[in-house]
Image (cartoon, rainbow, N blue to C red):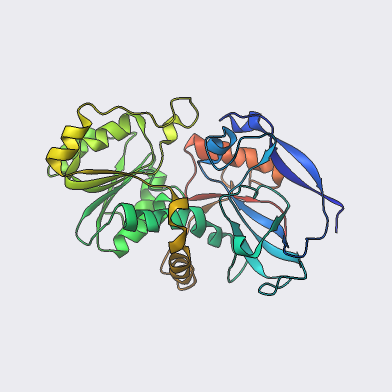
Length: 343
């Protein structure tokens, strides 16, 4: 066992991920009596990583602090008080304390979830899978026969949301930005794919969906948010999951809709904010379903390890910055994952 390991540390509060972080060496010591030491094999990239480096949430903002919301790896060692895990077991570390961008991490038992194998696809089921499924059910309240529009539908969360809505019997509209992503969405069963780079979103929705959209899953913000709100059906629900266009600016999620209260009132419409950490009581139920669906090939998980980028796969702690920048470039297809090290 090495005497030190590498991890990312946030040393500057900014949404510019490359400027925010540096690689540091940390002593590798045995876990305490109540701890579990995990060797990280894969780490998941999330759009909100740059909100964390900017100290918007999930941190008290005291520098330096750790970063990375989810890691998949193998248990390397356990403290003497740990009885429900064993060395060599594959687990996912997942919680509101960011620390996944690391070669090793220390966790309490309630921060780890056992998984069937070391397959990176399982990592997609945590932040992305749980957000998509609990968000559509609890905030979107989707029902069979409803029209559901998913923004960023070929992304890590979006491609799971598409499949979940289809499983519930919804008519699914997927927004995306390339023909390659559109092809994937059709393969996943999306009923109408809108390529907003080549089609006018407002014109398509006006012509093809004159009665509006029942549920809108909104992650983009800005002008897209305004356009989509104008096409919300009576009794419709617009779920605000994020606003990625504002993550790299100080504006963040501030968007103004004129006469908003009147429009909501007269149309019996709802705007609902959704963040995963408010629904942790549902995680066991939904994770059991999601893991089972992957094992039984009912849910297709698409992962992006950077294999199609100019510099190749995202590998090691040094590869995390590239992975985060790849996601925010909009070029990713599916869940962006970093191969931290071999297992």
